[in-house]
Image (tube, rainbow, N blue to C red; front, side):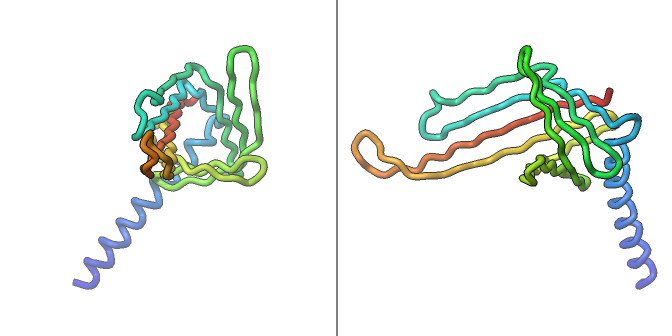
Length: 151
């Protein structure tokens, strides 16, 4: 019984590690350049829904992943572009991108061969006063989703 349990556990560990490695290799393989087909920004305010918005930007730029865990990101907005060096790490379910100053953003990662969806979300809760000067809790959520396709 111990052997069966050990084999099952070892197989599960092997399968989990192999998917992570497949994702890592797919990120940088064949030049490692990914088009950001769309970027969607969403803001939700629980207290004042009139402030809610969602915007989608098409052909938003590129992500470049290199084998050594470095790379770059370029975002385009009309005629201007912003580019920055990055480093990155991944698991089966997350991609963490560190900017040139070392600040990291953890994205939930949905991976299909040559297509990735990256989603990050931040929620803030604070108190403010309503029109009757009573304290109320306000919750704001910012979500960014990047749909990427390998070049």
